[in-house]
Image 1 (cartoon, rainbow, N blue to C red):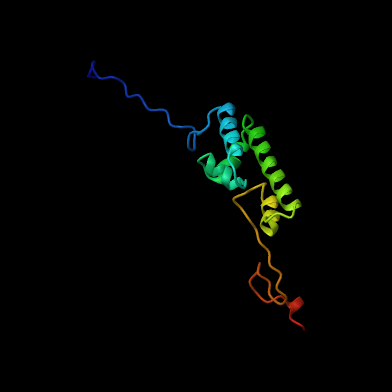
Image 2: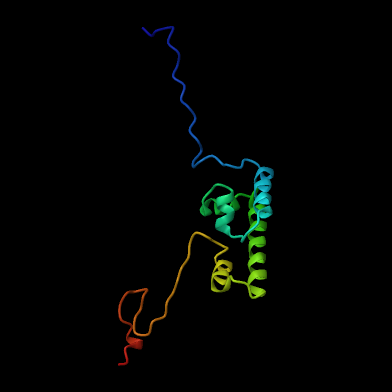
Length: 133
Protein backbone atom coordinates (compact mmCIF):
# COMPACT_ATOMS: atom_id res chain seq x y z
CA UNK A 1 0.00 0.00 0.00
CA UNK A 2 1.30 3.46 -0.91
CA UNK A 3 2.26 5.92 1.80
CA UNK A 4 -0.46 8.63 1.84
CA UNK A 5 1.88 11.22 3.34
CA UNK A 6 4.49 10.90 0.63
CA UNK A 7 4.49 13.75 -1.90
CA UNK A 8 5.07 13.10 -5.59
CA UNK A 9 8.59 13.85 -6.72
CA UNK A 10 8.86 17.20 -8.51
CA UNK A 11 11.61 17.45 -11.09
CA UNK A 12 13.47 20.72 -11.38
CA UNK A 13 13.20 22.30 -14.78
CA UNK A 14 16.55 22.33 -16.50
CA UNK A 15 17.85 25.43 -18.22
CA UNK A 16 17.03 25.39 -21.92
CA UNK A 17 20.74 25.21 -22.75
CA UNK A 18 23.85 27.24 -22.24
CA UNK A 19 24.60 29.83 -19.67
CA UNK A 20 21.91 32.38 -18.74
CA UNK A 21 22.29 35.71 -20.51
CA UNK A 22 24.30 38.32 -18.65
CA UNK A 23 22.23 41.08 -20.28
CA UNK A 24 18.59 40.07 -20.25
CA UNK A 25 17.23 43.12 -22.07
CA UNK A 26 18.42 45.16 -25.05
CA UNK A 27 18.32 48.27 -22.84
CA UNK A 28 20.75 46.76 -20.33
CA UNK A 29 23.15 45.72 -23.10
CA UNK A 30 22.91 49.12 -24.80
CA UNK A 31 23.74 50.88 -21.52
CA UNK A 32 26.87 48.72 -21.09
CA UNK A 33 27.94 49.24 -24.73
CA UNK A 34 27.49 53.02 -24.38
CA UNK A 35 29.64 52.98 -21.24
CA UNK A 36 32.40 51.22 -23.20
CA UNK A 37 32.42 53.90 -25.90
CA UNK A 38 32.56 56.66 -23.28
CA UNK A 39 35.88 55.23 -22.02
CA UNK A 40 39.07 56.68 -23.44
CA UNK A 41 41.56 54.63 -25.38
CA UNK A 42 41.56 52.45 -28.49
CA UNK A 43 38.42 50.53 -29.33
CA UNK A 44 38.27 46.88 -30.39
CA UNK A 45 35.88 43.97 -30.41
CA UNK A 46 38.00 42.32 -27.73
CA UNK A 47 37.95 45.49 -25.64
CA UNK A 48 34.17 45.62 -25.95
CA UNK A 49 33.88 41.98 -24.88
CA UNK A 50 36.12 42.58 -21.86
CA UNK A 51 34.15 45.67 -20.91
CA UNK A 52 30.92 43.63 -21.12
CA UNK A 53 32.57 40.91 -19.00
CA UNK A 54 32.25 38.21 -21.64
CA UNK A 55 34.29 36.38 -24.25
CA UNK A 56 34.42 37.64 -27.83
CA UNK A 57 32.50 34.55 -28.95
CA UNK A 58 29.65 35.62 -26.66
CA UNK A 59 29.32 38.86 -28.63
CA UNK A 60 28.63 36.79 -31.72
CA UNK A 61 26.06 34.75 -29.81
CA UNK A 62 24.33 37.94 -28.68
CA UNK A 63 24.41 39.26 -32.24
CA UNK A 64 22.64 36.08 -33.40
CA UNK A 65 19.64 36.97 -31.21
CA UNK A 66 17.13 39.25 -32.90
CA UNK A 67 16.65 41.58 -29.91
CA UNK A 68 20.41 42.21 -29.52
CA UNK A 69 21.44 42.13 -33.20
CA UNK A 70 21.18 45.88 -33.86
CA UNK A 71 23.11 46.79 -30.70
CA UNK A 72 26.11 44.54 -31.39
CA UNK A 73 26.08 45.38 -35.11
CA UNK A 74 26.13 49.12 -34.35
CA UNK A 75 28.93 48.62 -31.82
CA UNK A 76 31.04 46.74 -34.39
CA UNK A 77 30.33 49.47 -36.95
CA UNK A 78 31.52 52.09 -34.46
CA UNK A 79 34.73 50.10 -33.93
CA UNK A 80 35.24 49.82 -37.70
CA UNK A 81 34.74 53.57 -38.04
CA UNK A 82 37.28 54.13 -35.25
CA UNK A 83 39.88 52.06 -37.13
CA UNK A 84 39.03 53.73 -40.43
CA UNK A 85 39.77 57.08 -38.79
CA UNK A 86 42.96 55.90 -37.09
CA UNK A 87 44.33 54.17 -40.20
CA UNK A 88 43.06 56.89 -42.54
CA UNK A 89 44.86 59.59 -40.58
CA UNK A 90 48.17 57.77 -40.69
CA UNK A 91 47.69 56.59 -37.14
CA UNK A 92 49.64 53.89 -35.40
CA UNK A 93 47.19 51.11 -36.22
CA UNK A 94 48.94 50.21 -39.50
CA UNK A 95 48.87 46.50 -40.31
CA UNK A 96 47.16 45.73 -37.01
CA UNK A 97 44.32 48.13 -37.83
CA UNK A 98 43.84 46.58 -41.28
CA UNK A 99 43.68 43.11 -39.74
CA UNK A 100 41.22 44.20 -37.06
CA UNK A 101 38.91 45.67 -39.67
CA UNK A 102 38.86 42.41 -41.63
CA UNK A 103 38.21 40.37 -38.48
CA UNK A 104 35.10 42.22 -37.34
CA UNK A 105 32.76 39.52 -38.63
CA UNK A 106 34.15 36.92 -36.25
CA UNK A 107 36.68 38.39 -33.86
CA UNK A 108 37.61 35.09 -32.27
CA UNK A 109 38.66 33.28 -35.43
CA UNK A 110 41.54 34.29 -37.66
CA UNK A 111 42.92 32.46 -40.65
CA UNK A 112 46.40 33.34 -41.82
CA UNK A 113 47.86 32.31 -45.14
CA UNK A 114 51.54 32.54 -45.90
CA UNK A 115 52.88 32.13 -49.42
CA UNK A 116 56.34 30.57 -49.32
CA UNK A 117 57.52 29.46 -52.76
CA UNK A 118 58.17 25.74 -52.79
CA UNK A 119 56.13 24.93 -49.71
CA UNK A 120 52.42 24.38 -49.32
CA UNK A 121 51.50 25.21 -45.70
CA UNK A 122 47.93 24.04 -46.06
CA UNK A 123 48.94 20.51 -47.01
CA UNK A 124 52.29 20.66 -45.26
CA UNK A 125 54.23 19.28 -48.22
CA UNK A 126 56.34 20.52 -51.08
CA UNK A 127 54.31 22.07 -53.86
CA UNK A 128 55.50 20.78 -57.25
CA UNK A 129 54.52 24.07 -58.93
CA UNK A 130 57.33 25.89 -57.10
CA UNK A 131 59.94 23.15 -56.90
CA UNK A 132 61.70 24.29 -60.05
CA UNK A 133 61.07 21.03 -61.94
